[in-house]
Amino acid sequence: MGVDAIPEVLMKIREGKIVGTFLNDAKNQGKATLDLAFNAALGKDILEGTQWKLDVNKAVRVPYISITKDNLDVAEEAYN
Image (cartoon, rainbow, N blue to C red; front, top):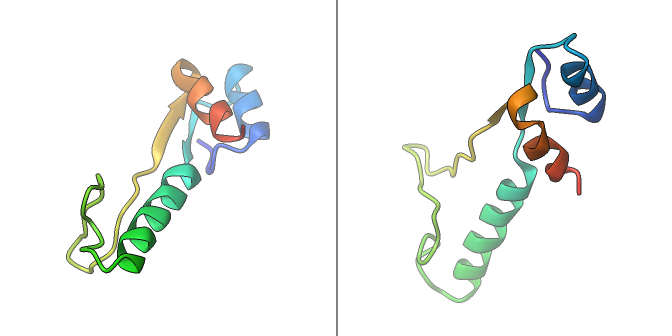
């Protein structure tokens, strides 16, 4: 297993040398930050009109995405 779905690891998955990796979903982390900041700037509830939820620590958790040979395209798209 690899971490962060870096291009070198994706190549090793494609070659069958590594089983999988986990993608730290930077695009959705950025989207969450922008969505919440935008609402805060407008004086709204920060979660209004978003898909995001706060956990018990009042943090938004954007889940990692498990990447295998079956969904390499998801990780490759993250780099575009």
